[in-house]
Image (cartoon, rainbow, N blue to C red; front, top):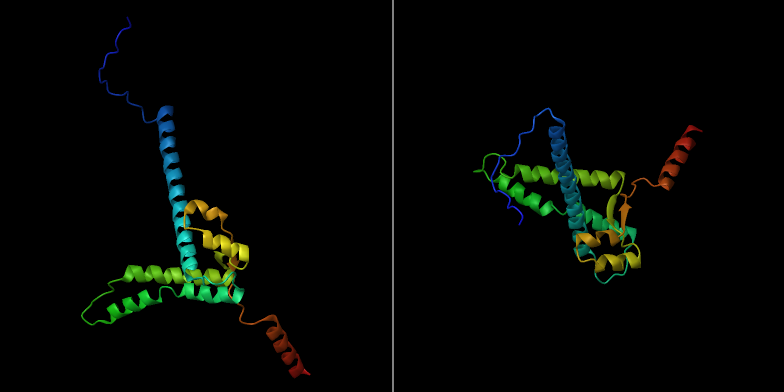
Length: 182
């Protein structure tokens, strides 16, 4: 008959802080922290993208099969002004005389920073929006139910803000300037 193991609770052996084993344990802990941090950052980015796409899904006209770029520009402008009502409420609270200080300062600062960042992205590199410029893209986007796992099936496109001065307007002003010199 085999012997039964003794169940004594011996304390674990201490590891010297300068040993190779301590270095390995420290590296494992750092790796786990790094993996958790990158997962949290990815989840945060994915969450903001899902929130933006759900906003667009709610704002799109359900009767249309596809949208033009001009219509997308108007929807994007509406997207950039989505916090206006909340900012007005904060201004009303600030305008009350019996209030001292800025009661909703942190929320107001976050909203203003978000709006500034999104406007800058829209002006320079283009705001990433769902590709509803085609019939197929619009169908796929409407069929999406908001789950993160189906996010990869959506096609996104970047739309840059309209240029104020078009090429023909610039050419006309150059010709007028040359005509004055003659």
